[in-house]
Length: 139
Image (cartoon, rainbow, N blue to C red; front, side):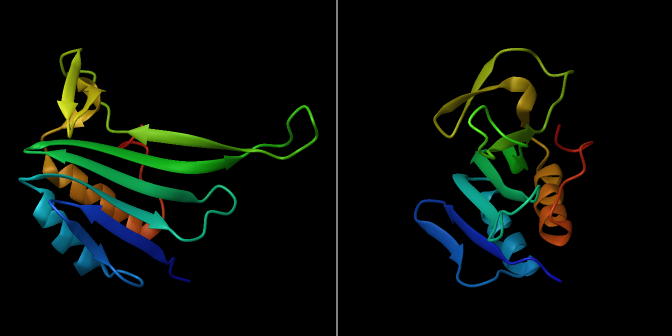
C-alpha cells in the first residue's frame, strides 16, 4: 500500500501540491531549491508506530541542510502513560570543518551541511518510495 504524503514548501512564496504528490511533483519542486533559498518538506499523513514522518530541506544558495524525523514509541513513562519520542537524523560528514554555518537564517553544525544536491534528491526520492531513508545517508 502506497503511503500518502503532505507536501509543501516556501521559496519566495509557496510551493506545494494539493492531495498526494507524485515523485515528479517532488522532483520538480526540488529543482526550484537547487540554486535558491527556502524550506521544503515532505511529511507522511500517517504517523503511527515507528513510521518516519517528516523530511525537511533548508536550502540557501548551494548549501543544504536535511532533517529526517520519525516518531519512536516509548513503553511507558513514570505515570504509566505511553509517550512517543522524536528521533531526528541529518547528513553527517566528519571530514567537513567544525563550526557553525548559516543556512536560511539559522546556524547549523557545518558537518550536517552538504553542497551535493544529488544527496538531497536521493533522500527525498527514497523517503517517498520507501517511507524511510538509509542510515548511511542520514545518521
